[in-house]
Image 1 (cartoon, rainbow, N blue to C red):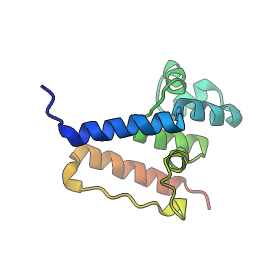
Image 2 (tube, rainbow, N blue to C red; image 1 turned 180 degrees about the horizontal axis):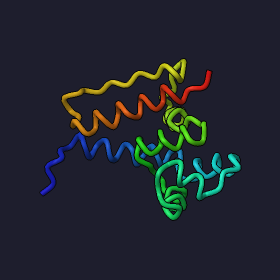
Image 3 (cartoon, one colour; image 1 turned 120 degrees about the horizontal axis):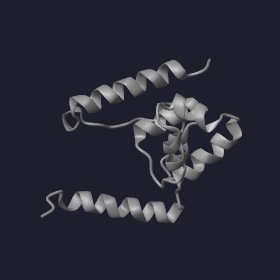
Amino acid sequence: MDNRGPRFFYALAKDRQMKQQYNIHIGRMIKSVFDESGMTVAEFARRIHCERTNVYNIFSRHSVDVALLINISQVLHHNFLADVMNLYGLAADNPSQVQVHLSINDMSVEDINKLSHCLTSLKHSKKP
């Protein structure tokens, strides 16, 4: 029996509805920016710390893990998170000032460490 509760399934249904409404295919978005980068697949794979074959898998995905998407955004110098937020109608007045409301109590220590690493990476990757 599934014990995730009605909120989980409502959120899942809402997510599917929004993806269908906006026809979001993050893999195609990534591939489009990648194609313009002039980077080879091997170089891109090395920079995002995965195997070359996984890059083609990413290009075919409808969704991507947020940590991976942040890493890809850094490597390709393109804010895919802002693109997705805009498609969902969640754009902030200033994209660099998007507020995230998380409860630390809902996160594992591993998740907190990953988030901290990603935020630190983003902070250091900003160009003046």
